[in-house]
Image (cartoon, rainbow, N blue to C red; front, side):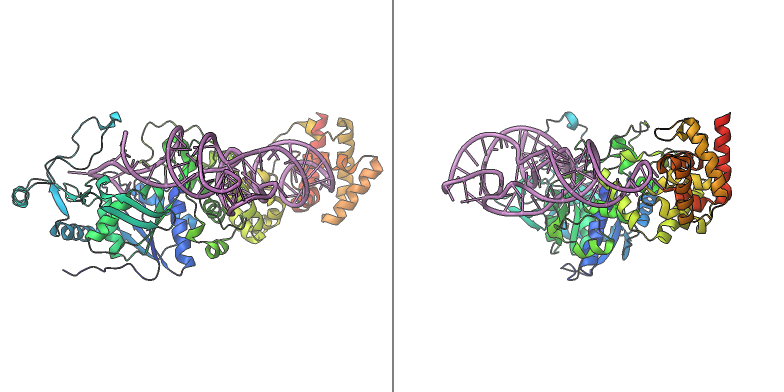
Length: 515
RNA sequence: GGCGCUAUCGUCUAGGGGUUAGGACGGAAGAUUCUCAAUCUUCAAACACGGGUUCGAUUCCCGUUAGCGCUACCA
């Protein structure tokens, strides 16, 4: 039997180890991002490991969801493993611990069935009788085929301490007496999470375990396993948890699709903005920078900047589609999750703001290329060249990519949706003024070159001639051409729309009034 | 219940024995532009509570409270 490596890799090797028992939620995504950032900042490797030892709860749909989310994040990783393919290693590690007498067989049937959920449960350390079973008796019953779980024999000597140093939470010490005899192997021979995780971390020579703070207490068990198996434990760094506005941990069932990464993708977040947002939750560059590119984040990232208190993802709790099932375990099918129906108010305002910032920071061609598929998917036919002309007119007016559908709809349709003719009435004016303006505008525009400056001059001149203010001139035209009051700048809009469409829409507006 | 972690504006955070406790989002008001945005300016908004230590604590220590996590043959 070849002895596994004794020490972690000297060069950074981090791992992201999701268990495929649900979709990829924002908390997991942040853990992945922090791992990735740490590795990239320090020239290390990122390992993706599917922790799929829980055959009962695993699902292919969950695996797909995780890969969907990670693919969108677009960060990539260097190595990939599946824990279920490494069970031999886990068993060998368990065997090694057992040989040393640091683990024992527990023949107690699983789930005593006692009302454990009654809340008032005392301190459980081990099943009475199991730990003291003689080796001979233990061997005999095992040989007889009696099923057993393998438990770690936690040292019980008073004063025995388990300790480790956490890069975020500092020195951690706990009395071994407070650690229960946790299971290493289940009675069906499958490794538990604790065993599999440690065996793999050691074998993969993971140098830094960066994970959620919900594992902080478990780490004492892990240290015990590492040491029992003859490995030097890696450096630990626990991340403060991401919680919902109500302070509870993120859950699909309780909080709806807002906690799923794909929801952000489908709502029109830029993955770089989403990453930026997540980085600011529980970590700070400490220089008041907020809008940061991936390169800047990579350069600034360090474990020292990580906080110790939970961070709230400030979304609006939305009524969840009642579907009875435990959605934390069940994947939201695309059908039950009509993603697009998400109102922007449901997202954390900071995420929205950052997304808008990143959108504004994108080169026009780039943004345009990202907008185009969304427009096409909505059933509009616009070519890339026209989209590039539309993009600058709306980029400061959208927070989410899919806002393009409401911000730029007027460029996509042949026929404007109907609107209230009263909208045509300018400030401090009346319908007669609107009509007068539109009629004159049509005449003037017919003889004007459709470029910003000529349009500007012609229309202002017309306003003066009619004795109305510029604003009173522009408003009726804007509504006639856009179908609403709030729209992109007028002259640019007219230019992109073209003379023919504009004249036709104005014509239509005047007739609309008359009827 | 046991063990552990945490506590600065509504939210994300900076700071640290003596500060006007800083920034950002969001909110309010104003400026600006052809509307809406964007941009700019201004305003409101915080050290959980109680004890110590100290000349002086929001900062250090202890306690309380609250929140969270672990307490499975889940991860």
